[in-house]
Length: 330
Image 1 (cartoon, rainbow, N blue to C red):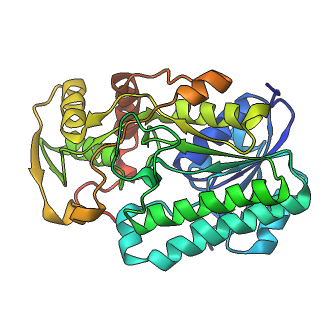
Image 2: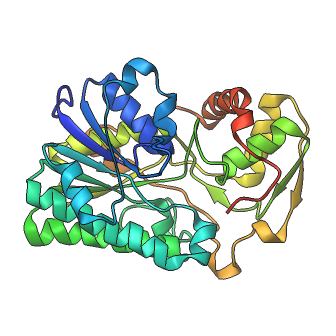
């Protein structure tokens, strides 16, 4: 496998949850990192601002939007490896603004791929999602599982993956697509299920949730980030799609119990209709088969869900004032 040391890499969506952890890990591996973060008038860089000052100084920041082809070209230029994470990800919001999800996730990805092709990059890592599989038709879910657009979000990511595949098949662009199953950890948005549970549990005993019987394959963020780097650097992965998963799933109800055990609290669950997805859009079970990634580049999730939850809880205890837990967030 190629070493990332001193390689020039671009991370799109670097200010986000997974992107900031990936950026931090790349810096620890001595990569030369350019970060594309979405432009705002405040000039903020998201979670990159919470990295150690010594790490922040090493990052070249580009502010922009992947819907702008010129910005994509500028960001890609001079980089060897592209880690493309920038996306609209909030599933509930995709029901409200489906066109925005297509514009960012599908067309934005096309812009990035076109720029990568023009600049002749060594590898393009397309970050997909396990949501493209929909409710499991068989378990564990491998890379050959049918793709089902059960939400506008998953539809937009299926489109993005197909565009990435087309650039490999049509132009020979070295592309690998990774499909992380449900990632969790420090810095995650309060919209996600585990932060939703933790933030409420830190303040009270009654937890308001939607469907608690659904189950997910929960993968700690640093394991996911490490898998992304290995998938990108492995020569054999060009043209491939690989899952990043643990091979185990837990119901939302079980996760609440784990959080309660760690906090030493008896938590009470109250379900709310507004927190539930439309019935036909609900993905009931996701559990991934990561044997392909294990065989090709030795991927293995190193954190148990309890260990990952403990680290995540410590983060939210320290930063609880940054989050609102009472109101349901799209």
